[in-house]
Length: 554
Image (cartoon, rainbow, N blue to C red):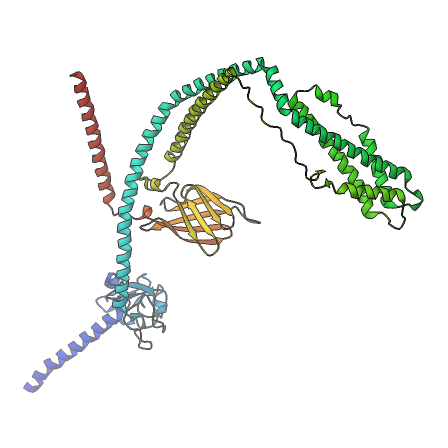
């Protein structure tokens, strides 16, 4: 009996130990695929039951992760693919934990998200634990990115400081330029009045010396007038010779041959004669009464009229020469062909003029050479130079005002970050084209020629990291070209890629410190530091003014 009494406690202890072990196994099995944050949801109740997370059913705790889907929401199978709708937790010790769809558990594929291989625990597929290696590379990449962001944040703080200071500077410069406008416009009006007076005085003098100047001008143009008169007379002689040739052809050709080329030429000549009857030729005596410049121009115009007549007559003869019937041996026709051949040696049909003849050009009028005329010219030149200088100054100020107003009206972000990048241009070359963008300006594509891709039209969204450039050159059978410029953090500002996701819609990717994140609190500290600097500058300025005032009083 004693022996039995001693063995009973031992057996009871062994049975309790086995029950505890089975319970631990069930709990560990149930916890597979569950994240630490959700572990408290996978604990049995006092009677070893467990409720689906959606509350739809209560099942034995042993049914959790038994590879059978009991719950509608699939929450009873976080560690198997039975339901396939839940999330399997990969601890990935040495790297970053992650979740995958439970449908990918034990599917024979080593998922990258589970670098510890825990998703293939059934032993059918061997997935080595590479989390230490992957984690080391990820940490190295994170360190690299963090280094870029830290440097980018430092550079962006410089952008912000520059932008805010530049806004103050531009505002002050705009005020200064506006203060100068009235003064500069008064100076311009004064210079204009003096120039008008100088021109009026010079005009009065020139009017008084008109006869003298006309005599000088006539003497200057006389050789040209004589040469142009000679050319006109020669052109008239040639025209008359061609008219006589065509008149002889009309009267003497053998009409019995019925040569269609000859008939066509004769008919064209008749039309020409009818048209000529409506014209009035310039009489040389009428030209002589004109001022020398007008006389020369009239001679040139009349010569041009005669040359056009010559061209018309030549075309009639040349058309006949090319198409007449050579078998007829019509003497009148052969005579006309002979005249045409001789004439064509001297004629240039392409410029409708005689070959090797250069057009005469009317020269500038020679200045009147006298001390008084020189005095008026010098006065006018000085007044013109003063007016030009005043006008240039006024234009420069107005242009400066417009440029500053344009920049002050631009949206450079809430902290003026992008002020430093306005009008800065960046290029990107691929195998065929060079793409360029001038921030807040224009985007272009160039190869053998340049194509406008768009003009800055605004920001997209509220993050100040996407710009739109629209209204570019219209594509053939497509839309106007446009550019979407997406920015990312970098230590330099440069275009890193250009693509065309849709026809004539380009995507530029630009890295720049201007969008690098600044850690919370640092921006406020920078603002406080800048406020202190401004207060110190203001205090020093006030102290300087006080010192000047006391010095003046002494």
